[in-house]
Amino acid sequence: MKVTTLTVDCGGTGIKASVLDKTEKVLSDFPYLKTPYPISPSKLVGIIQEFVKADPRIKRVTIGLPGMIRNGKVVVIPHYINTNGPRSVVDLKLKKAWYGFDMQSTLQKRLKLPTLVLNDAEVHAAAVIEGKGLETVLTFGTGLGSAIFCDGKLAPHLEISHATIRYGKSIDAWIGEQSRRRLGNQLWSRRVKSLIQELYPMIIWDKLYIGGGNAQRISKSALKSFDYKVKIIPNSAGVTGGVKAWDLLG
Image 1: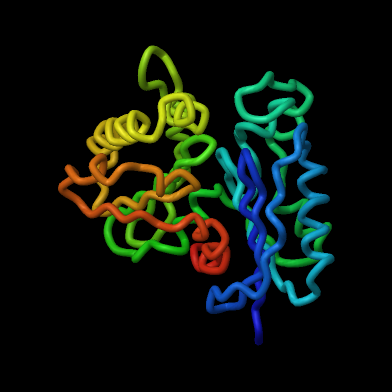
Image 2: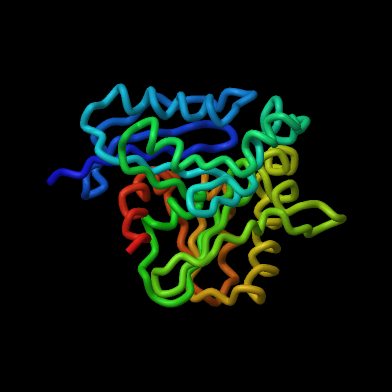
């Protein structure tokens, strides 16, 4: 039986979607969609429905969302609760609509297809982890995403980005895209190095994977001093991971 997966990587800046076969080969890419704001749960569900309608080969759907996702439900989500996108004013109606929203069940009912909704860093991770020891994935994009695995099993999600780091700033604000643009890649890379140095004693991973849209902007010198394995993963993992993500359920 051919299992064809639609993977949708939902970011604070853009939404990427691809159709893949069981070997993770991309069969088709949808045009990059700039995340439309304000974006309600129903609006995002509608966007995903349009992807599914456009390709009858799709047999299942994987969604990667920012924030804390448990059993397909949104516990906390950044960006999408803001009227005009990241760092803009929080819309209390959007916050009420998103927090507690069961995206997985809603999509399964609407699409009539098996659907898996995870944190976006967890989908990234599914594409690259080896299943040995304690593996950690950090994704650098609009903010910071994270996922932790022990011998291939997904640990409960920790929203590391909400912790404070300097001058009471959240890690998300300190390391996110707006800070990178303001500082430039070199100074921002120093922050990335400092963050990793501070996270390591708390997690003590065996291997660290770094992904997300800004991973390639981290200077090589910032990553040279670590005495454990660090691997940069392509941003495409956010889409290709949608196939192997289903193996995490086993």
